[in-house]
Image (tube, rainbow over all chains, first blue to last red; front, top):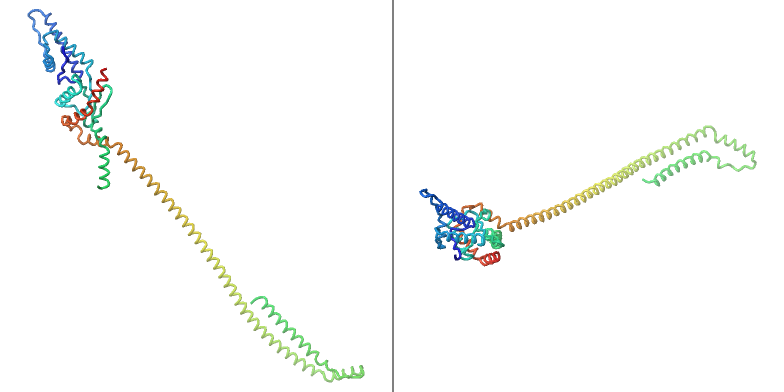
Length: 162
Length: 210
């Protein structure tokens, strides 16, 4: 299998983990289907939209066991080795905003990057990014801190009446 | 009137009394001074005795006594009058002297009293001036201390305001708009910031993966 193409709906490591569990469940279903007695009915498992999208993006036939194995293996690899960015926002981001962020990260940073979303209300606006070794304060607080001299100049001007 | 004046007056009185006594004695013994010259002392004595008896008979002696008494009384009266005048004058002078002395003493005492009052007033003024100077000094010290304290407090507030500027504004923004900021509207800003830090993020990811 070529490099795993992660869907834009797959955002965090837990999404990858969930896909892996879903594939394992699918395997279990097929094993049970083989072992079932003739005439007994079986409830077909419902596949999630994300798994379908992943299968489509990676040209995987989910009915084929070998394809499923390859996909599981690729997902495990992604779960273990894909870079994870921890990004905190003041509020829960909307799916649309999150998708836009994921697209940008996978386009500009790493195609298999995963994003762990966190909440930090004190940052008011912007976000706080943490990688393995660094933190990037991209909050409103940091921006204002950078603009502090200008703000002080404006306040001083207002105090002096200019 | 001084002591010399008194001595002079008393001397004059004593002199007058002495002259009076001398005059009385002179009158008493004046007739015996002119005795006739006689050859025989005994005869002379007898003659004198006879003459004396003849001249200085009882009437004459009485007459002389009367005249002497009158003269003595006259002199005594005159001297008494002089003495009275002198005493009156002395009394007047004494009164004047006493008045002048009392006045002078009182004036001196008043001057001393006045000087004491002036000194006390000066001491009080000096004390008040010192107190005023001390109060003024204390006031200036307090004013300076309060000014420095106010300036320090002001500086502390300004420094704190400046150091906490971002936090204050951030807190204000958070309180003012809170969760009303839609994250979708912030995406341009966030992606811009990420674009600015893109290289650093990629490098850190590469370093973390190796």
